[in-house]
Image 1 (cartoon, rainbow, N blue to C red):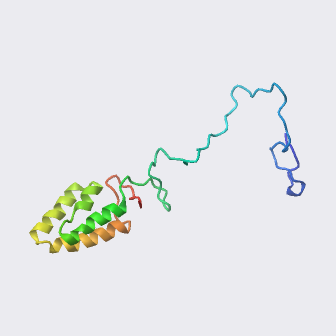
Image 2: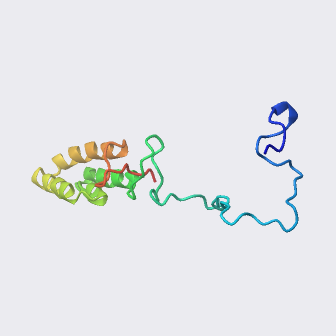
Image 3: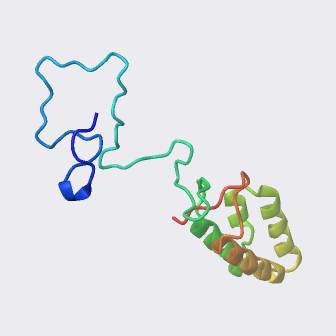
Length: 137
């Protein structure tokens, strides 16, 4: 049943009751009538399959690890502590390898590898061990 005219010039909309429509007294919805969707309150909606959000372009769920934290930790290689960013991300073997290269090369290899790796992390070229893109914050 259509409640009003469907043409926009008549002000009606298809399938919607008129604005002043009142349900009859003692009306009860049918037993299997679908409930309207419950929308989130002021806190917003959290997707259970992507608790840290989704990538704005690809829609993939984001990692629980921050690319800013990982990139800055990796740039500690400028001070001889390369590999900390990779260990933070969960790549423990690679992080330890970077630390060893830093020790063997007296820090020179650590600085070069740390800068390159830090830039790669900050420019979204590195993902977490589960293959998810790193989150911004």
